[in-house]
View 1: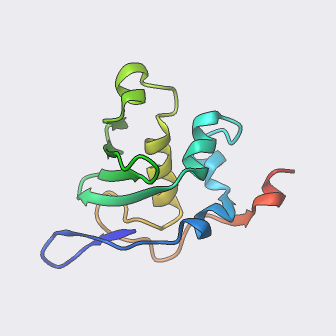
View 2 (view 1 turned 90 degrees about the horizontal axis):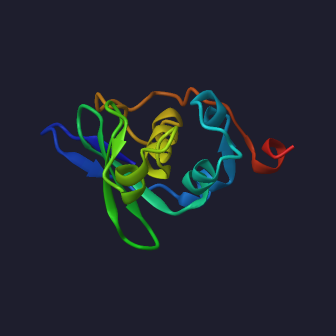
Amino acid sequence: MSSINESGKSVLVQTELSEFRTTIPTVVTDGGHRIEDARTQRALTEEMDVWLSQEGGIYGVQKGASGSIYEVDVVSETCSCPDWQTGEPDGGCKHLRRVDMEIRAGRVPRPDGRLTESAAVIEMPAEEARR
């Protein structure tokens, strides 16, 4: 997770990925992402670090396995990853979806740089969500 400090610079704060994976936010469906969709599944399960790069909705996403870093713009709903560049998938690539999930869950700041005081999503245990 990251936040903007007094000087306007982004500060990266790590969150436990296992914490994110142990629950499936109901926001997945609220955000328009079908849980059965392969990209949504990868957004939920793959190791990714997400941070707010600059106010206005530009986020950085680093994939854990490859170390690749992509720029996600949540305002224009674009990503610099190859999947987005070649196909512009419906609902966005896994990086765009993950940033959306992280924002909605209150794990990274909103595009204006503010952290949500309390997550507006209700989380449920993963096994309950699979039913």
